[in-house]
Length: 257
Ligand code: CAA
Image (cartoon, rainbow, N blue to C red; front, side, top):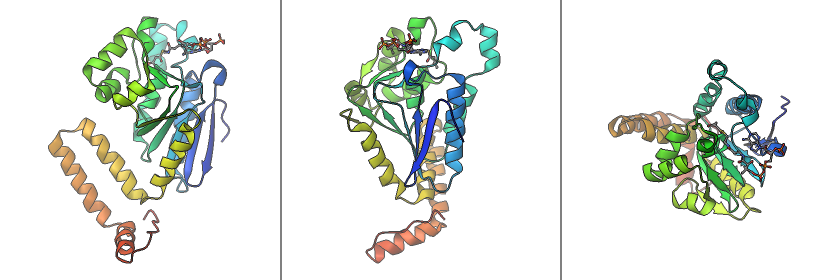
């Protein structure tokens, strides 16, 4: 598949997607989002890939939705375009997505980052939802996912002032997993991806789904979901292999069955 605004590759069971509109700080236009989601879905179906890393460049993960595409559009055009529908498909990706972010992570860029399951950020990262400064508001989950991530007060401050926070502050608010020097964030994300790619693939996917239930279900229902996932994995080949390997004091060889 050839793309114009993203690059995609596979290195040792890790699918790597790089946003690639550097001249305008990876602004997320409709075509980029369509390419990105198509590739995420393709990688999700590819048995050779176990984990996905989503990145941009040192200067920008993404500076938001492409303002050029919105500036002249009427409300009806935006409504008919339904430009955020494609975003909903990201939450259906079953393999873990690790965000490797640096530089500007603004607006839709922040919303995209929050669709990742784990985030490694460079020290130069600035994260924010500046839509208020354009006279609008986030439309791809910013008011919801940010609030769930950092809590009501901090989300309110960020959304109503539009001012970004530093990587260090984002770490303090648990919006990212790890902050490292800019030279290291990408390698650090690959290291995490490699570690996860060596786990039993079915267990990885069931755990991802189960963790996301914590956001959406009452505790009793989520615990029920978790228990059924556990029972299901007991039927997998990888469960036999994992437990046998433990007893034989060797490294397991997981097949994903
Ligand atoms: N859309 C389109 N173009 C963008 C862009 C965006 N979101 N962000 C940056 N660019 C372009 C600039 O227009 C500029 O293009 P030219 O060289 O052709 O002039 C180029 O990228 C470089 O940007 P700057 O010269 O502005 O670079 P800077 O370092 O001075 O400033 C910045 C960087 C602070 C990120 C600034 O570009 C900026 O404020 N960008 C807009 C951020 C924003 O408001 N994002 C939210 C968009 S709305 C949204 O995302 C809605 C949603 O919920 C999905």
